[in-house]
Length: 429
Image (cartoon, rainbow, N blue to C red):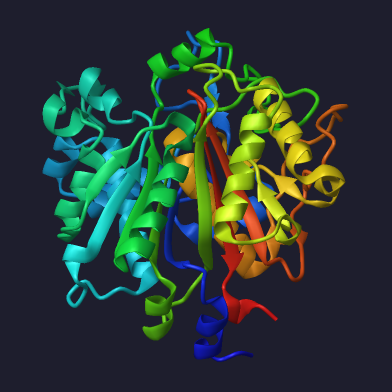
């Protein structure tokens, strides 16, 4: 095995950013290991909605955070904070606490002026404070203060206040690409300042109004009788995405710093690209050209060859148009080799958590590189004549020598983002 100095010298020109901490909450569990294990086992977390009566909605299923999450809230926050904060801000803090603990950072000695906080959220902060919300275990109704918790930047602000971080702090709102853009901007901050960045992707959009709005766009699956089979990316019977809740925090720091302090490193980020399709506010460019260009730019900026890419974590929403466009994009960029690159979508198991999705999928890619296991695309049962790549159908796959992966996120408005992650050099053969 090469020494740290040899690895650093060999990487030379590349500005690598280490992922040293992960905190993950989703419908499969409330910690990273439980969520990862559920994905590897190919379990679905999609169920009938229990948070409210969904009978008036065409779609009555979702990926809700499990009951264990609410017990975690009660154990972690005072009654006053529970009354005066949104679920989104609480989930953000809980995911961040996990990531900081995982990264083994000593907050007492950390230079907090150099710690940035970037959240990616599509719109969760609107729910609690605009609608009247029932107290848990109470019939009283309340309003969360609209100004203090209704603004999207409240999410990053609550983290700086919670941990005393004094670097830049802001939220990115690019719909389904929000979490990925936050990761990309965090990568930029770390490599340009040599500082540390906490990134959190978050969305808790489990409201009747949200479901009805997406139903109006005919974007959601209405497969209510079989919730576990509703999210089926790239499958011939896919009929829309399944909305879900989630939060994922990542600790990003300079590779050299992480190595010198002996931190555990999941993987390194070596590049990303963000582009705009300028096509349609909702629909993707069906040629796949915009998505292909995003992936191409990310690969070029990471300084790797296309041949090195060994896996793609797809945006893979389970909508007809998105899955087809992404498949065409992969074929456009990789040509015949596209058929030899495994592609999978964790949304088949955990649904689409909007702003959290890109961060969750970046974390999954880091774990994939560290553990050399590809998470599956479940519910892949009926072939689609055009969606004909290797989607790692139904069962996880162990691999060897996987060194470079892509994580795709494509949001409403034509907001495209691809992140390039590579295996931690010390884990390579």
